[in-house]
Picture 1 (cartoon, chains in turn brown, orange):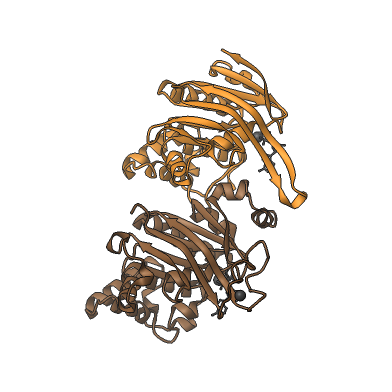
Picture 2 (cartoon, chains in turn cyan, yellow):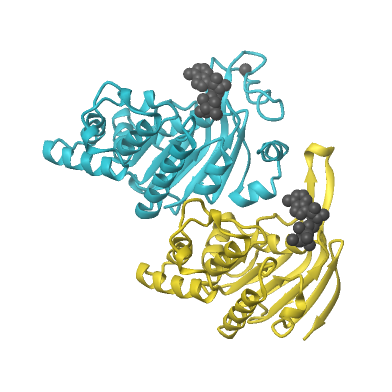
Length: 277
Length: 236
Ligand SMILES: Nc1ncnc2c1ncn2[C@@H]1O[C@H](COP(=O)(O)OP(=O)(O)OP(=O)(O)O)[C@@H](O)[C@H]1O
Ligand SMILES: Nc1ncnc2c1ncn2[C@@H]1O[C@H](COP(=O)(O)OP(=O)(O)O)[C@@H](O)[C@H]1O
Ligand SMILES: [Mg+2]
Ligand SMILES: [Mg+2]
Ligand SMILES: [Zn+2]
């Protein structure tokens, strides 16, 4: 397998479903809710590849299925259908969605890191910053107290969190700091794959810059493969070579990032680009 | 085999928002670029010059036609149909592009911007640093600027930085979109010297110039464009 990650025909629906769901939803209909049975088709027909060391961007309007997609990759959500292969797990042979839940947990803890759109989802806000990192290390079977502490210090230093704040609760951290603790936690076990969902949304511009620089540094120095979800094209342009555009739960266009921005093909992408300030 | 053979290249833009309006970028383009050659393109604004270069670099998706390119990594490859991965690799290792508009990453110092270009090709850090410095020096970018962010640079300084970043890799094939547009004569000469130097080392080039006179001694073929088509040509 050349790809770091390969996803085929991924689908996630919420609702009981009916034979018309897929035909009556998607960008051509401008909706993700089936008019017959009310099922939400959060994402469908999603196939994508990420190569080793590559950063893939995902853009799309609110509700287009971006978060659902990355949560399904992180096994937070069970897919309705689809295949998912990771090169770092048994050479990409098994469909990860067919694994037992114990094995899925292993893959998630050892091979993936996730930074959630909402820090509440990625962090225990009432556990110390260091404790949050320790949790991720423990989940990967690292029980040595000394080395846990050492690694936590290293990660916090790397993400520019003062070590003096290590025992403080993230609840009282600024948004930018919370995102940086999430990044530390996600990176704790040196995973080959990082999923980043709107990491900079809602942060001040200068704090955004700082978080983006950190991500760029991680990518450059460690060659980690990443999927970066954002509705901000300046973030996508800065971090990625290739981009996928989603609307109403489907991929409407994918291509080289500069091509998507300068020669968008799909009507929706043209609209997105034309609405840039 | 020539380095690049463009046959019947057409690019039109389909604007959905405006009732599906079609805009012609370029049409019926035929060009052959031999190894080590330099083609100059002239023409009025809007004639379709940048469109050709952007199709080669695949910032634009050609509407029809072919662009056979002799790649080190892939052999003969039609750039009009190359996959995204192949284009990324070719951009990193073989084809450089200096754009008419300046694209620089925020918060990367001038020096680091040049270094990163080289490091991306697999060049060791120390060597990259040395070569970046000598390239910045060649283009006359004041040393006091090397460690600062380019967002505050003047148009000419940014352009010289862009040139340094593109040329430091000594790419096999270089696309130049009005690389002398906002430069004074001294800087223009630095560009011409570097072009000659790269040419001696085997780099092939396609460039758009306002004042082709200035490049007269450098180009091997010259084409002029009007309303999307090549209307005149001359071999030096
Ligand atoms: N647990 C759920 N139950 C029902 N519907 C859901 C659930 N989770 C997500 N959805 C729906 O699925 C669709 C996709 O949601 P998702 O969170 O993936 O969007 P998004 O692209 O990440 O949007 P945003 O840019 O606002 O974060 C939405 O219509 C959402 O309301
Ligand atoms: N991304 C684009 N979308 C729509 N039209 C474009 C785009 N790029 C170029 N064009 C049009 O194509 C024609 C040729 O443009 P261009 O190649 O930039 O001209 P030149 O570089 O010769 O000034 C012009 O009419 C221009 O408006
Ligand atoms: Mg979301
Ligand atoms: Mg132009
Ligand atoms: Zn239905």
